[in-house]
Length: 222
Image 1: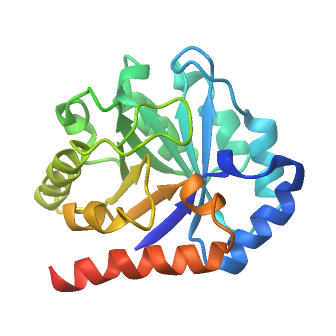
Image 2: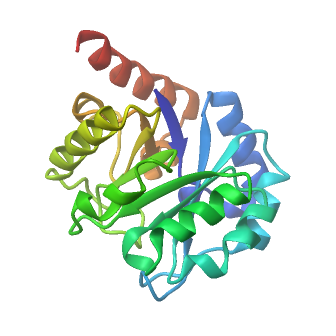
């Protein structure tokens, strides 16, 4: 079970300290939300900030591109230090080609889709991806509540992974907190993105430990 705190919810005036706090707290990844103001209504960060984050932490960077035509920027985000690059099925006409370009850069490739998009949109790249991300909120803003119907999609993705016979991580992003991580884990997720669910608490270590304990307890019973 891996915890990937979303840096978008961090205090950017203390970014290096926040990253060190995540390391000390036992986080597995740093989730980096990249938004272009087109695919989603918000604008966040680009390769320059990803590079700064990479130089400030030992944690792997889990970079989620919520941008139109991500193929134009794969090389830039790879060069900036991304370890995992995840793209949206809706954002490109050539999903397989984009996944291959991520792999060609020596990075792990992830795919995702909006809550209203069917899992079938990623079926044809199952033989190539390293991570599937299930969005449990509509992308664009942090602090949203978890969409309950996402649990069915997580379970469906877990079945797809089992059928593929491949070791693909199943990540969930949106509204994840200590109080509901157990449900997502029971549905089949094994990587959990949390923004305010971590950064909105006074003790990151205590929160991450509680999240991991809740998630692991469920899988141990399964």
